[in-house]
Amino acid sequence: MFPVRVIRASIFASYSFVSDIQLLALLQSLELWNMTENKTMTLAAHDGLIAALAVSTVTGLVASASHDKFVKLWK
Image 1 (cartoon, rainbow, N blue to C red):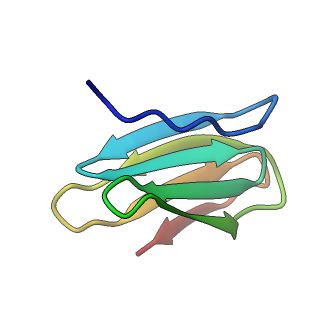
Image 2 (cartoon, one colour):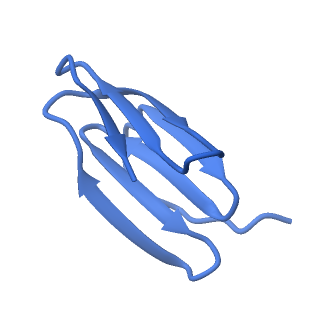
């Protein structure tokens, strides 16, 4: 059984899951959910719609790509 968290959003662009952290791209922001501590954090990430997310299990870096023509790395 997996824990479930409902996020109120009509549109999300991308989703990623690593260990006990879930990462969701909501339009222009990133929502991180630490399932162990049941805490969330929202980051204003881009000026355009986020199109893709990628997470490195080696470095812990998160890459987000957006229609604003930027790719950003997050740690």
